[in-house]
Length: 259
Ligand SMILES: [Zn+2]
Image 1 (cartoon, protein in one colour):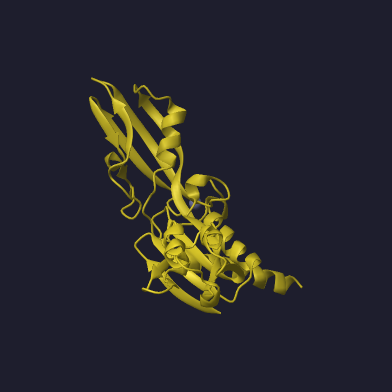
Image 2 (spheres, protein in one colour; image 1 turned 60 degrees about the vertical axis):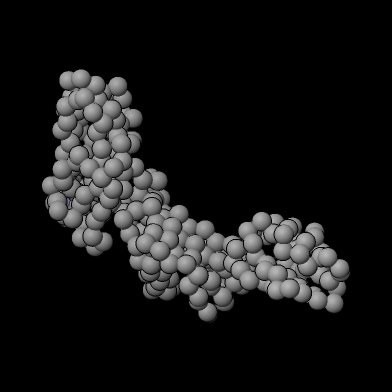
């Protein structure tokens, strides 16, 4: 297996993985998205809500607010010693108290745990009018994307790696520039004579280049993938991928032990 990093940012990781099959790529994608534990607000206790938004709607918005947390610091409520009743090892309370007028932001929450705070301070939650009051307690727990989208760690996608070749012998007059122009994401570059494949990972398999000239061949390989992980939680994309691999490994081990 060969891996090449194509792009690495704070929230995004793009890899070129050679030597796996579609089943494995898909398993990795699904586990990364739906099984890596993430902290989010599970439910909200409203003390006072004079805002124009119903409790349920506001609770939904608060649930989707990404939270910072340290992986491994908390238990899943159902696996905790408290048996899911709620204790400091499996839940954190965030308190919000505001009087209008003004917009209530995610940054207005005061957490009872220093490690669990909103990832961004500037998410608008609701607008309060003159003297309108909002007082609530939000309880955050660990969860999995499988249970609710608010616990989703990342958006993960992959595509087949395109093998793009240009056969110089079949190239007709004037086709070189036509091929370069035909490609919307800009895979080709013109070197003065012929089109050169410069950024194959940008290919969207639209086949415009194949339409432009018979000299171009695009063949998606089902053993090589461009794998993209975009974190939508407080977790680092590399951590998400590692954790997903650990989960897959654990599952394979469990199966092996039972056999
Ligand atoms: Zn507990």
